[in-house]
Length: 576
Image 1: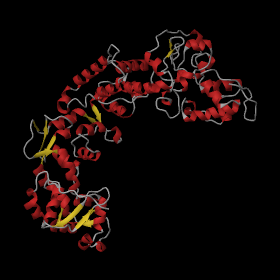
Image 2: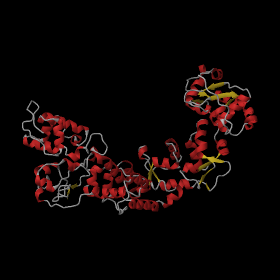
Image 3: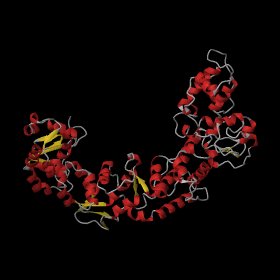
């Protein structure tokens, strides 16, 4: 890197940075030779000295510092970048690439032997995974061995501790082997994928007997904590026996819950570790129980988000808590709205009700206790049908009914249901509901107790999608029944108009669903009887929708069974 000719933007004294030097270290040394403070130099360069992101390798803000230095030193951007970035670091700190900029540690680390050779702060020391100096096989330090206070970057430039003034040259060193994971993840662009996988496995290894991973602040971890955690994560990535030990520990820990739910949820972390695994050749296992942190308070400083809520709420019993997304999955894809109704009804209790939904937590054993209260059977009982075959589709045809209402009634045992324990899958997969009791309990008559209903309820009433409903409301058939001119607004429909349609006509979609008949066969029966619909609508992305005279119902009762069970009608080629 060559310094160019001076101009009005140049510093009084210019010189090149050391190879691989951190940006802040270079700025501090540059301020010293120009006889000014770091703040004064930052002001001259047009940067905010207090903005830490300016000195974070790989961050977009760092590029602003580079551009300012290019003008002040009269050098090329490429030359400055190649000087400050060592070859192994160049591809590990790329703006907006996951696994790069967030790996900068918040504190200061240093290699005593490196500083004995040359006093400046190396950029590589800022990388969280850079724990052992590969040149001297020496573990980096992050506190002064004399006063035990955290190091500052000025120590690397002045050669003395900023707190006790002890000389770096007199500090003792300790020779250690370079961890295999450090060698592998600090090799450039080809190791970025490995770094991301290792970090994901570390989220499992930090609390391996929990029900969901722990998101962690790697940049805040101490060297000994990080080394212990990454050693565990590396073994889990490459040892089949270690993952088997994890599986056995989880099954032992959650044996009671597995009897209710099966082992799918308790083995969440094992399943994720298997997906992340890079092999099984490495021998040995890991200690699952000891924590990598000295105290619970220290763990609270490192874990983030949902797990932090769990630790604050449950302390040592945090592993009993599951996330809302896990509960929805365990119940079989229940929608968040339905879960909200279950919570409001007191079926499930959220242990942190004031948190955001993504951080909502539930005690798994309490959930299992509620599920175990349901009736069970080893075989299907006559008159009962799978929940998934009945309820979701019925909610589309019964105004004001949704799955949350049904599930609340099931858990309160107000609707006959049972779990088929011989069937595998989630709770909803195993759930069977009494069909006749369902239709006795949920029907349209409840709707007619209200004077008006919102237009948004009409798709359920007519059993079709909103585009079909919008066209239907504009037809002469509907206009002859509903006096839209007398309505106070167009968003609420008087229920007496809808009751007239319900009583005097046959809505084919709803009739076929309620009587568990094939709509195609119903259309064939009515066509053979030469009965045409009063109105037919078939908008784009919607199935056809028909309304017939009430007499059509008796025709269907009389002639439906005359058709062959697999009769689908004659297919005709459509003409444009």
